[in-house]
Amino acid sequence: MSDTFEFDVFLSHNSKDKPAVRALAQTLRAHGLKVWFDEDELEPGRPWQPLIEAGIKASRTCAVVIGKAGIGPWEDEEMQAALDLAVHEKKKIFAVLLPGAPERPELSIFLTNRTWVDLRAGFTEDGLGKLIWGITGKKPKKIESAAGQTCRRAAHAAGFGRCRTAAIPTGPDGGSA
Image (cartoon, rainbow, N blue to C red; front, side, top):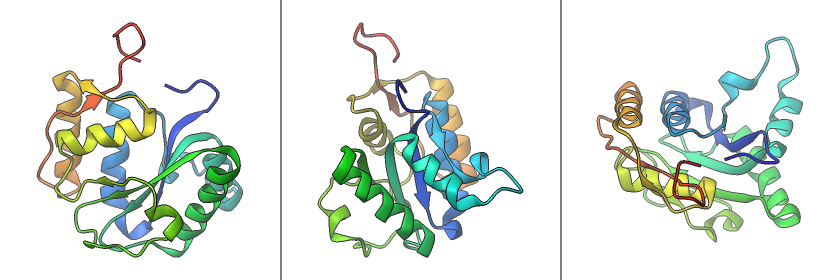
């Protein structure tokens, strides 16, 4: 889906929630999205703060992923940077609640005024469809079962135990984007 951005989404997260976020990154990639995930983008031996900054700027959207551990200190910094870009460059930022996230997580009031994606019930078709819609800006349609199998493997690896076939956006001609 990227046109002028290198990545479709930057996954901002607390490192304590890494297994669940890793599974989410795998699932989004299985749906054809370009994901900025620190494990895959932070080159060993280089200062990581400038790489994170570049990743946020190179991503069309920023998903602030909240799991059982809540928002971590560096995740808060990433969220503040993405909120600044939302104001000045109209970049989209939204919260994604993972299984184990609190019922009412403590979030910046500037993030709570945006629609969230609730995955607390697991990587369900509805939840992933909304996440992909938030990332792409296109309401999704059903996808092939191969991506669903990847989703189920990723959900199982993260200990969610639940995943159904999600959706991906379609291009203007009705084909895959």
